[in-house]
Amino acid sequence: MPEELRGIGVSPGLAAGPVARMSPPPSLPEARTVKDPDEEVAVAARALEAAENRLRERAAQATGAARDILDAQSMIAADPTLKDGVTDRIKDGADAPHALRDTFDEHRRTLEGLGGYLAERAADLDDIAHRAIAAALGLPMPGVPQPGHPYVLVADDLAPADTATLDPANVLALVTERGGPTSHTAILARSLGLPAVVGCAGALGIADATAVTVDGTTGLVRAGVGDEEVDGVRARAAEERARLAGGTGPGRTSDGHAVDLMLNIGSAADLAGVDLTDVAGVGLFRTEFLFLDRHDAPDLEEQVDAYAEAFRLFERGTIVVRTLDAGADKPLPFLGLREEPNPALGVRGLRVAREQPEILDTQLEAIALAALETAADVWVMAPMVSTQPEAADFAARVRDHGLPTAGVMIEVPAAALRAGRFLDTVDFLSIGTNDLSQYTLAADRQSGGLADLLDPWQPALLELIGVCAAAGKTAGKSVGICGEAAADPFLAPVLAGLGITKLSMSPRGLPAVRASLAGHTLAECERLAALALDAGDAAEARAAVLAETNG
Ligand SMILES: C=C(OP(=O)(O)O)C(=O)O
Ligand SMILES: [Mg+2]
Image (cartoon, rainbow, N blue to C red; front, side, top):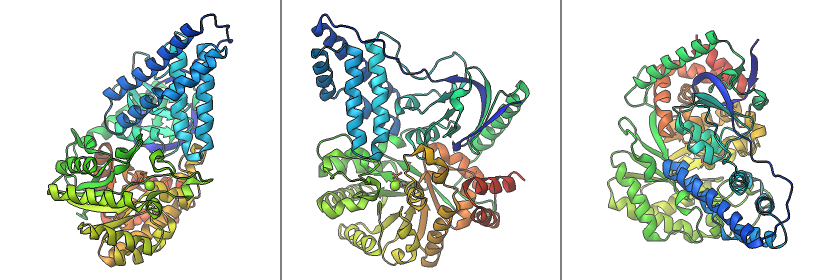
């Protein structure tokens, strides 16, 4: 009898094949007496350099968000304070592997002490530590297995470095014990188009080479399946891929109701090589990537160049630029934000402009100048807006800079409930479901253990989305979704049925969402939305809609 494990499906698709588990991190041997401290320091320095180089190599092979994450990691590995800490410990008698371990542990504690949102950065640090220690011990670097045939990768959680350079030709699907729907792992899996299930308790207990099936939509993993089941799932997956590959045209339901399909990007590089036919524009340009890992904010000129580069690539559609979204899960040290016990509930997003308005003003000036240099239709929105005056004030600032279209993100339940009033002063709304689910369900978006609460199928989240969409309809203004929920093809008809008219996602998500919308009339979408709203929780909502969709 196959064993059934359940997690959260975070990247849709079916896969079947043998499991290969992630190589475990190196275990530390007993401490040894160091005879030549200078040589030991040199061993540790070479190990850090090897980790840095490996991350750089991987960054060079990756693109977009993956490359940014890997570049950031390689910079951490090159941080001189790490090397100093290791050197001091060796001078105090530690050997290189233990000096590395203790130094990384200290940095980890510092990061964790800065607040829960840094858990993700702490995981990055562990990954670098494991690489450096393996290098110091003369062991191969831990990471993605290479069994020599296609496989389902099972891991505790994947470090960005691993996810970023996975070869979709050899990895059939990802299954992790930890991680949530908005984790880096989930986002990168979606951008690679790999089926993925996270938060899957017991996954690491599946022995290597066991045949499994993975459903990245429902989160079901069946371990120990027979050849017949493997073949059946593979045939269904192939049919599904063929069906999606054939889809073209703008987003619309089968009876022609338009739902614009748009892209989420972090920089112009994310548009490289992407087929922009039938794409209505960029629904979320996350500008914080330009501000990451630096000591000062980019100046006006640097910002103008970066924005104009992206605008030029999309001169025939709308580009929605989000102003800097710093704080909480997106720490930007140069801002010098003070430590807070609950950073996700603290000074983040638009709230940073209360204390440092000049950063927002410079950014708006740069966006306006870049817009003038190009023919793109540039819309501007603010993250983490809570009240109507905040929205009105932001819109006024945007317009003062000569930018005609101002909107806000809906990421806070208070804002969703007041969407109608917000639309008195702003031109559009874009729902950030990653944060809106965090704040609606009171579940930290970094917390893998609460992944079921963060699931975008939660009826409470859907109800708030419905409130915003209805407000948009009344006002005759656009209400879209740019959180990860927009990339779920089974949720797309539900969102359309709730009245959402724009869905913005990473390029990989587009074909499946397009095909799913095209498979339903608007009236069917409305019926699916009613079913989902009627459910008790996310799992019930998904099950009810899938049962109806699969007939
Ligand atoms: C799109 C969103 O913003 P981010 O994930 O960048 O916070 C969101 O919160 O849904
Ligand atoms: Mg957000």
